View 1 (cartoon, rainbow, N blue to C red):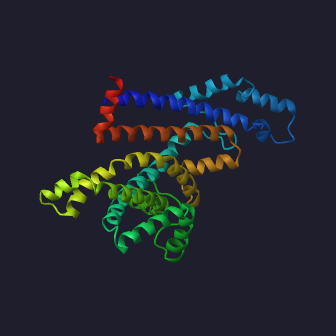
View 2 (cartoon, rainbow, N blue to C red):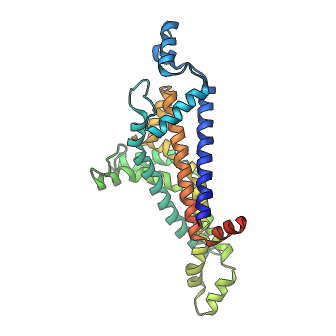
View 3 (tube, rainbow, N blue to C red):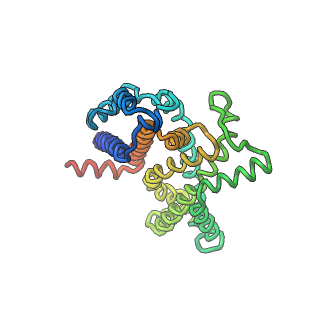
Length: 320
């Protein structure tokens, strides 16, 4: 297990370094003059040159990269050019909302996917299993932002049950936070639940023919009891890998959903930075989002190793 953690940590650090370089280089290749954006087209060349020097944009790319990545470790990512806020403090203040939205959506989708996928597999030969499969495919096909707009129109505007936007922090009111996050969570979770449902269904259909299912039945269990007790666990372990693969898409969906429901998370901050042409904010946010995905993948890899001892055994065999 220690070898697995060490190897995954090395992969995490190397991936984070590569991601920071890619983000930095891509932002520089996009071009554009920040000094002109801030001062306007009517500014003098001398004023623009002075501002570039003040912002450190007249230095070489390696020097700028070293300054930026060093600032990350010091908790200093600079200031927003237009709004004037501290980028690191703003990211820290908004990160909790985005993470809670993504993680709750992931957990809810996993639970619903296991239940629906198992039910579909156990009724694969009748209409009930087919109906669940069709609903899962529809859930995958419908874009989350469209679901969000539909929920706002129906649940918020027509029925008035839940707010159409805004956010009440958990620290102020748990009920208020749940009310403000319910519709965004539903919009985010539908497609993800469809993916997990189809995966669990397929995995369950594979394991139902395994010898240990027949052995459990030979010991007196019913087919359904053996499938639920032994099949669900074995079919669900690979879900950790599928969940890790879905993290990138989930965070991308969170960016859009935060804009639809006017939630003050990283997604809205990123959209504001893009429309305001705040290159340094976009660069820092993109790297933080990459870092979050890498860390969550790291944690899921470790969890996979704990759930399936064959992973750690293979790690040891590879080293031997």
